[in-house]
Image (cartoon, rainbow, N blue to C red):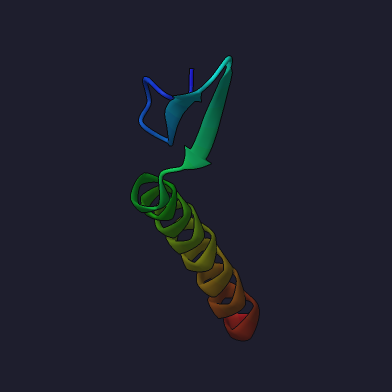
Length: 51
């Protein structure tokens, strides 16, 4: 599920599969989510200030 979404990369090591986070897609998701939360917080503070 994470590999097809390109959020992790994997490689075979013997009989094991080692996974690692793919930093760029994870950062994009993080930045998008944080910007939405920050916008909501700023809007709330603005409404409280006008109050």
